Amino acid sequence: MPGPLPDPKALRRDRPSDKASWIDLPSTGRKGDAPPWPLTKATPPERKQWAKEWAKPQAAMWERDGQQDEVAIYVRTFLRSQDPAAATSLLAEVRQMRDGLGLSQEGLLRRRWKIDEPVQRQRVRRQVLLDLLQHSLRHRLPLEQPRMTVAFQVLQDLVRLRHHG
Image (cartoon, rainbow, N blue to C red; front, side):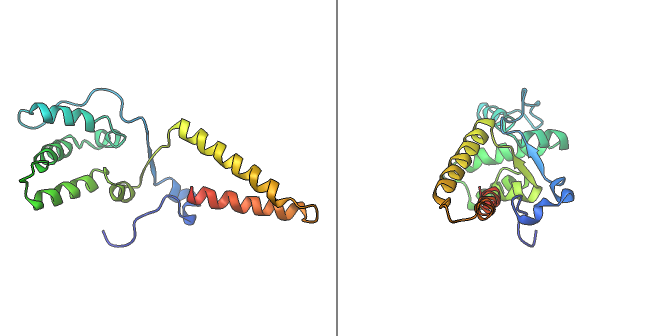
C-alpha cells in the first residue's frame, strides 16, 4: 500500500470520524479455545503454535473475519521458516503474512488496529504523569510568574504527553 502508515496518535486523529475507524483489540487477547485446525492433520508443533496464535489480541478480528485458513497457513509456514535450511523466500512470505494478519507493527497500523493498554500500565502511566506535573509546577511557580501562564504551560505538557506518550 502506498503512502505513510496511519498513526493513531497523530494530531488529526481527534476527528470523531477517524477515531471510529480504529479498532481497539483487548490486551488480554482472545478468550476461549482455538478453533478447530482447518487444514490437513496438524503436527504437535503446529497445534501448539495454533493455540498460541489464537490467544493473541488480533485473533478476535481473525475470528470475526473468518480467517482460520489464513492463520493455519501462516502457522504452518512460520514453523517451516524456523528450519535453518529454509529458503529466504519463505522468510519473506512469513513477513508478508504477519503484516496481513496484523501481527507486525506495520500490519496493526495498516489494519487500523490498536492493542488496548493494560489497566495496570494505564495506572502507572497516569501516576507518572501526575508526578511529572507536580514536579513541573513546583519548579515553575516563582512568585512573580502569573498563575495563568503556569496553567497554560502545564496544559501544553499534557497535550505533548498525550500525543507522544
